[in-house]
Image (cartoon, rainbow, N blue to C red; front, top):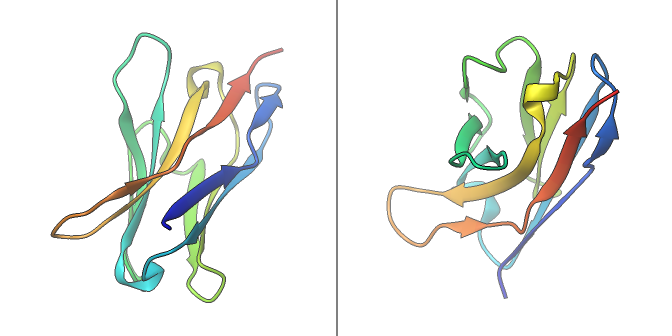
Length: 117
């Protein structure tokens, strides 16, 4: 059974930090590019960050560059998102996704991040 389980979300004040984790099981984790997406209320889901299979290449949305860092541990089958200098606009449900050039892709259930004073 394939699972992606996100954790680490919560309520944080503006300027604070959170570290999200996504633990994978049931598929060949190291063969997949891993992504973090987010969806704010009333908005479309958007790509936040992506990391290639061996972690050699990362990409970020302009809105999070220099504040967020994506990383992965293929031994532990986990992908991380370190989020610093958080802003209220970062409030959203954050999802991890496993993808490659052909189906299937896998999604986690999401974790809520709320940035508010």
